[in-house]
Length: 282
Image (cartoon, rainbow, N blue to C red):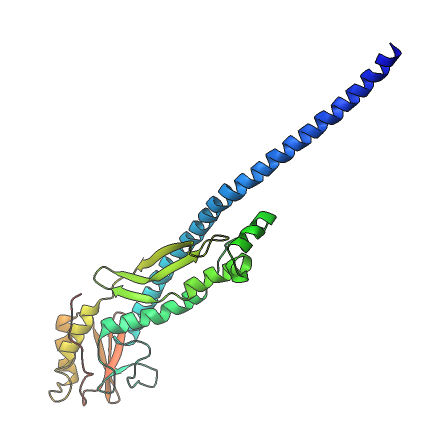
């Protein structure tokens, strides 16, 4: 009895230790399996979700940037008499464009496209990504080494990479007929993935279409007001008003100032108007 009384507590202690060890091993094994599952399944899935979210943010940012750039470009076109702000025209003392042979080719559509590209650049250059990189674990370190990733491929380097994608976008097409702007393709690498694992997007946006036809009307009507025809100023205003009611014309020194809504410019009746591109309805 004494021997049994001694062995029983000892066996109980030994059993408890064995059970604890077994539970520890089982728990460690389960945690290891869980970590491996998250690493092999969770990280890739989450990385794809994260890059998709970044892509959608970029898409929205670009769409709004194109929209506002188009509006600013349209206003600039009107304020510069159908020319881009970078035009070579002579100007009055207050900076009003003077239509004359000193100007570039008169092509409001191409001028608008040019101005839109100029206005879009600052928007793209100011893009800031809100992407939150993974907090690197031992498993991710292994993946980084396996995939031979460089510092710019992960963490803050990846964030700068995403920002540079937007900053490097260029306008591929301005479709005035369908009122849309198509940019170059955006390619976003997937964090901790193998080289070539990328999320690609074709970015584009909508714009309002300026009233290009009004410039053609102005040009046609004013052509009879300059050399060699050179109608009297009051007669010229009457001719233009028949086509564009509400147009304002005022003589100042040797030029005639013209305003029609937000469109403004001036012309010198003694010289020819700028050479014009063939007018297209698209």
